[in-house]
Each structure stands twice: as C-alpha cells, then as structure tokens.
Length: 237
Length: 237
DNA sequence: TGTGGTGAGATCGTATATCATTTCGTACAC
DNA sequence: GTGTACGAAATGATATACGATCTCACCACA
Image (cartoon, rainbow over all chains, first blue to last red):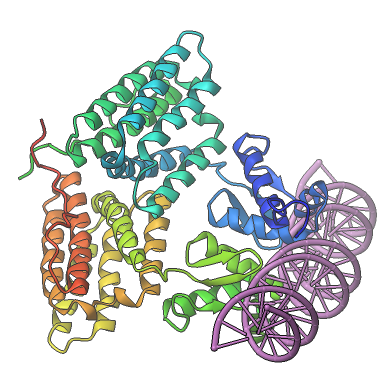
C-alpha cells in the first residue's frame, strides 16, 4: 500500500470535479468553450480522462457536446432558468414532503437556525451568502428523502442553478424577505406534521414564487398571466 | 463529401446505443458485468469509445461503476423498481398535466385508439405487447410537455423500467384490466379540461397503484400499510 | 466590393501501447 | 483441513500518436 491510502483520485474524477466546480462558481460561464487539450494540459493529464469527465457532465446536462466541434458550458438559453426552477419545484417539493417524516427535532432546530441566519443576512444584504444559506436550509429539509433517485435529481437541479449567475438572489432583492417568511411557514407545516400533499405544494409553490418573482423582475412588468402556483386543495368537479 | 452523408455515427455513439439496447432488451441483465475489452472487440473498436459510452450510461443510472473494478448493469437491488416507479409517478404525473393543454383532438383520439388496443390485448394476453402499447399510450399523454428537462427525466425513467424485467405487466396480470380503465379516466379528465392538479394526481396515482399492485403481488400478502396513493383534494387544517 | 474557394491551424476521434490494480488460483505452512 | 501468502492473468486507467474534421482567415476572381 502506498503512503497515501486515501489519495489516488482518478484523473477522470479529478477532471470532472475540476470542470464542474468551475462551471458552478462561474469561472466557466454559459457558452464557454471547453477545449479538451487545454483542460488536460492545465491538469497535467492526457485528454482521455478529460473526455470521460465531459461525457458525464454532458449526460448531467451541464455541458453541451457536438461531434467534431467540442463541448461548451450549457444553458446559454434564458429559458433554462425557467425550466430548471420548474423541474426543481416538482422534484424538490416531493423530496421535501417525503423527507419530512424522517426529520428529527434536531434537524428542525438546525433548519430554524439557518433561517435565522438568512434573516440576519437581510440587514447587510450579501447575495452570495444568502444563496449559500438558502441551499443549506433546503438541504436540511430534503436530505432524508428515502428515494435516492429523487435526491440525485434534486442535487442536479441545484447544480444547474449554481451554474446560472441569475440564480443569485441579488437580482430579486425584494424576494428574499418573503422567502424567509415562507421558510418559516414550511417549518411550521413540518413541525405540525401536516399532510404530505400540503407540504409538497408549499415547497413547490415556494420555488415557483421565486421563479415568478424573477420573471417579473426581469421583464420589468409584472406578468399576472404566469400562474405557476398551484393549489392542492382547490375544488374539483 | 463522402458517399454516405447521413452515415458516420461516432464509435462512441455506436457503443452507447449498443450497450443501452442490450440492457433494455435484457440481453444484459441487472448485475451483468460489462467488460470494456469484450464489448470493444465485439464492436470492432478500441476501448476508448466504449469507456465514454459507459460513462454516459453511468450518469444516466443504467450502469454502476467502480474504480479499478469495472462496470455492471445497475439495479440488482429489488428496491430499484420501487424508487424508479415512485420517481416516475411524480415526474410523469407533472409532465402529463403540463402536456394536456397542448394536446389536440387528434392526440386524444390516438390515445383512445391505443387504449382500445390495450383492451384487446387483454383477451389473448401478451405482456410484451401490453408493455409496449402502455408506453405508447403514456407517450402520447406527456409528449407535449413544454419542459424539456422533465421530458428527459421521463424518458430516462422509462428507460430504467425497460431495463427491469419485472416491469413487464406479466407479473401482475390482474392489474392490466384496471390499468386500462384508469387510462380511460385520465383521458376523460383531459378531454373535460380538468384542473391541472387533479390530472397530475390521477396520472401519479395511476403509476403508484401499479407499483402497489406489484409489491402486493410480489409479497404474496397485500400490504395495506403501503399507502402510496395521495389525494390532492383531501382536507387540510 | 462582394463572393466563393482553398489551405493552414486547431481540435476532435480513435487506435495502440504501457502502467496500475484487482482478482483468483495455487501452494505452502500451521 | 484450513487459512494465508504469493504470483500470474485479467482488466481497468492513462498516455501517446496519428488520422479526420471543422473553423476561419486569406486570396483570387467576378
């Protein structure tokens, strides 16, 4: 056994982590051309492991690939944020509801503490910190989801959001305060062991409201014809 | 330009299609060891494109990969069917509801025709044909879903199901008749332009009921403590 | 001045070769 | 008889090499 038993990350994994991190922290912006040889030499490896890493990222939707042309960071499309948030609303909503029964009192306390920090951040507003804490908060809510597929999809959704600069809350400053309040409401639902569907839709609508706020903010004009929110208890024929 | 302008599928793509097809038609069963060199020589290519194909399939969840050990077809775990159906219930349910407003009268007629064929299949029961028609039916329902991410996830969910032998309806013969009736109900909801949430939960519960039937059938004893179904209109505090 | 061809450079696609790791059989010791 | 250790074979991981394809700038010609 070598001197470093924990070490030995594969070159392929190294390249994967490297590129993914750069996409998520916006070193590589959407549309950025990913040249295999350049990345390979930057990491001191050959192109083969880099190609494999790119393939994985392609399958995850973080990069787009074209034959004989190359790879580039995905999501130049402005609708990308829209569809990603929409997908995440559905998937994360369910994950949150499914995770709730397994949350301990300690988890709840932890979530409340994070939400308190979020509230504090509102004073001296720091979009980056807010976004990070926001993920921490929601992670506590869905982390016990017993379905690993769903959990994986939630992770990928958040990864895509991180890759989008627009996901930062800085673009919709007024939204942050509402968001903290909605978090509190969701925590109340969990604590009172509310109906699963009600919780699912609370979590779903929380995200859709954020999306609507973003769209309204971007278009400068409030679009009331964008009824993304849904209500599970609305009357049925 | 060469003589065959449409030809020239990359070796990597070739390997991807090859392995994926074999997984889905159960030539490669769950747990099957995917030896890179063997696949490469079978296709007459080198191992490099095969590795890339395996990486993509890994990211899609069809194969599992372990460093320095190799790849094998995923889902040896019996819970895999459970979680996949659960995921699909959520995602396909939403996709169906989101697709409904874009369905034309012709689409509806097509769906009804397929469901009629499904009903016919019940006479001289053919599990393979039923499973194929079942996918055709649901494809018509969700194909207009405007969110490409969700659509992609639905496709992947069905791909995983195809990879599972147990997904064939043959294991729950009694379920098929109910299934056809539920299809008809869903079509009625679409035709009457029912509420999106109601439709979403009808589609979701349709799948969860199939899952419950499978679980009950497999365990020989009906498990009433498996309340997978949810009702959007149930009373909330 | 605009348009189309052409060639060089950049980059991708794949094969071959070599090194590293794992696995498995066999033999030896207790 | 059982367990362990050693080694060979199989397989995966990566590097290098070369051919294929694309991009783009430049130049000839209308």
